[in-house]
Length: 446
Image (cartoon, rainbow, N blue to C red; front, side, top):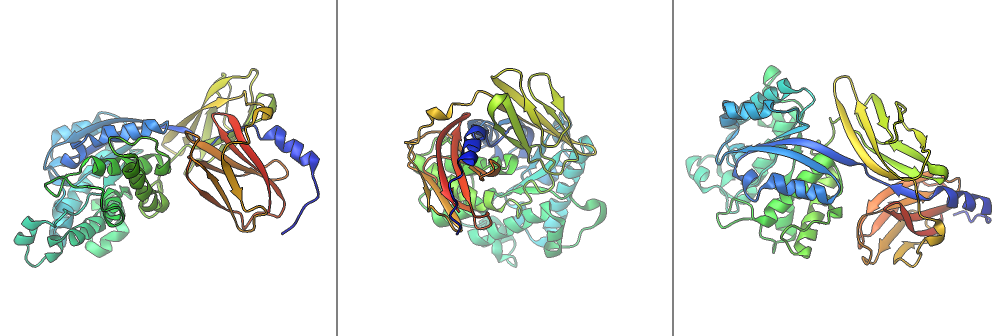
């Protein structure tokens, strides 16, 4: 640990630079849901849109959901084909009939996987930029008694755990060709493109194990309750928008405790393991953050993925194709900044309201109930709040040269542990910002 001499010039530089911050650009996605009663019960698409709206994102959706239908019905249904061809979608979400994924291997390959591949081909032929996403369902509460009787040599479906485990395995096979080595051999044109999974069934499994008082099943032991659909909506929010579900402020019809526990489960299972579910792995994605400083100058940090070119619109008529631009506005105010990320054939857009009128540091309220400890910090820095503040806020760390070295979004009551073990020894400024205003700052020593 190195204790530095006072660096007043550096501190002054920090005070000038650390004025305003916003961590996440809003997303607008166009999504088609194809499924059955697990999709239309409690109107899962609308519930997902409501969750997204509460986080400042926009989900424009359509759905085609017929009770009892599965992939083999949909791949020969002209109305389904018409829905797919009706727009250029960002994602098409496919949900299989609940019993199909857990059937014996041969039946699964012929009556489920191959029809799913037909649907994926139709999706790609309509727009090669559209991603296919699979809605992982779940095992019945007491197992599948019908299939248990029909397939005495296939006892796994007789219990929740067995049916749920098979369902999860098969949804991974839809989305990742490597998993076909487990369930059979399909090659060539019959393969589904590498896709991604919305792991609703896996989130439900975690909730059942860790929060058993939350009822996820209706009386039939199959369909989701409102809590079950909320778990699905939070999971889809992660899968589509790639944001931490713990920050979701919308509780739907649930108690604050149950909603918070469901969001925590979704964070652990889906958000913390997005690569495992291939969430975002193949996506072209426009994403950026910004820091607004003195003189109406704004520095943008590009966090886009799988892009080869960029176009920025700063909201004042100016544009650029730079990767990480710095732009100076002629007048203070709020501007909607748009970033379009492109690759060979596709594009993706993010937008964000940027304020160039930061609050004076003289008005910073250091009495907000934030704690940053330990100080000095060696390997970990913990930042927590009492929960009295409302709404999402950003946490920023700046080094002694005024450079932004870490950013994170958080909510009141959530403890954030930051790994600073690789940081250089020295003085750092921690700021907490909300709606373009710095509401807390403190200095720490590493």
